[in-house]
Length: 362
Image 1 (cartoon, rainbow, N blue to C red):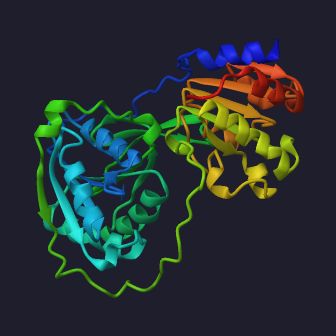
Image 2 (tube, one colour):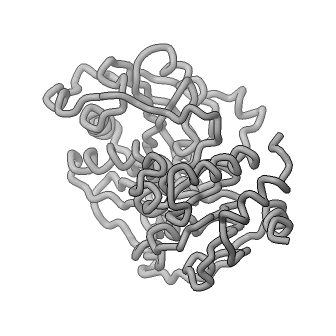
């Protein structure tokens, strides 16, 4: 019976209802010319999904906005990514490419100086990056060099300088207006800005690609940090931040060995694996799988939580999920307050039953 209930949840899509009403804090003002620089992250010759969401956010600033995409790196993969960027969105007017060994790895110091250089030359009204490790690492440092205050974790854009962002671990939404000097610098939550489908016509209409003149780029900050290594999960699972289905385990799994049940279930569902901070701190899984306010913000079509109590920091990272399924033996666990489907039961009985009943992922 438990497996049948959860299987129904897996097949059902429920749109969450809106529970907050935002009130404007300021009267609207005439929109000035909007020119936006988007800091884009790329990998293996393609623009990352989070950066595509940043482009979508930039396009929503105004009906008449000019978007420039900034790419940095070295080698063939950079130019491959530039070709992809030139046709990934109709609002992109140009792709700026900084090709140098200084940008082989996305370190904050050289990237921040690059943003300062490009901004001083072009005078953009806005600079936007996705609110991931890439954007959070670079944008605050660049904002300090430009002597402006960034607006972080934006989830909605009301006007070109009026934004909505979460506060109190996502329990409230705050409407803020930027009144400082240009540029207005933002990080956006990629889950709040869906990427439109790429059309065939768009693929044939490519934007201009220009090289950034790096002769004036200072070298005083180079060497303050250094690249050590990058580790990636060996298993071929969906990326946690962009997965359609996420299966998360909490402290209730008790051991790292028991957490393997979560991995088996995720493999059967074709899902990404997530974990709570408590599970990460206990050493069950590495911290790149952490979901929540201090981990990854996710918004899958289905979020399944096993042995997750529902701490406020964790709930802040899953609120935009379409359907939330929770399994916990504590009927008073906070996770049940946000769950669409809840099972009060022993996860050590529920998960094996699910593994037996669910078909293999295609």
